[in-house]
Image 1 (cartoon, rainbow, N blue to C red):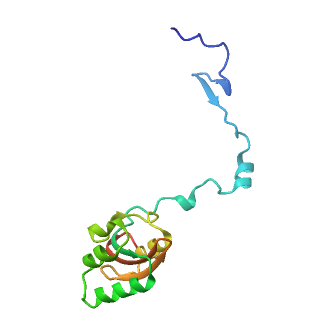
Image 2 (image 1 turned 135 degrees about the vertical axis):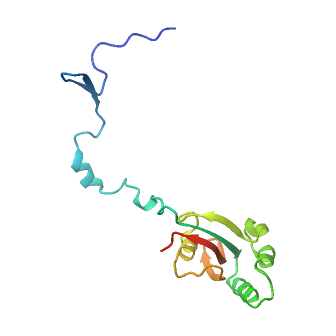
Image 3 (image 1 turned 45 degrees about the vertical axis):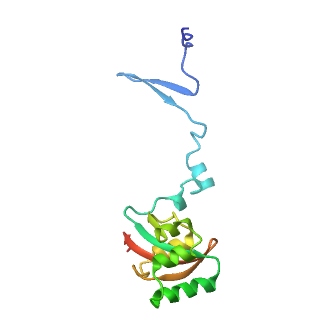
Amino acid sequence: PNPPPPLPGPAPFSKSTTSTSSRHTKLYGLFDGFGDALKDAFGGAFDNAEYSAPPEGVKASARHILVKELSLCEQIKAQIEGGETTWAEAARTHSTCPSRSQGGSLGSFSPGTMVPEFDAVIFDKESDENAVLGPVSTPFGHHLIVIDKRTGVA
């Protein structure tokens, strides 16, 4: 089956202009002609600033132990710092996160991947790498965190 022949005249929502060298067609959008009025009315509502990507190169790799009770979180931290248990053993024994089987490893991630409370610790330049941090409370429970590596945090 052959398509129907084109209709004579310009396409809908277009305006043809002719110059000495060629013919140009400009498509008109629904909001053309409103210009600054729309910008003033909606401000930055559609600029996605709060969802913008983090600066290039800002990443971290970290481990965590997640538990429901704050007191247990504090007890685990004391045991690790006191040498009574290792991080991997504590993660395997106590963490409620599936990452427990990998010693709590979360792999590499960028800001905005984890919950804000978690990111605030991980990407804070004052947070030491390779130290047991926390407890950090989030909607999931209480975390102990070790930042293994971090780049791009100034």
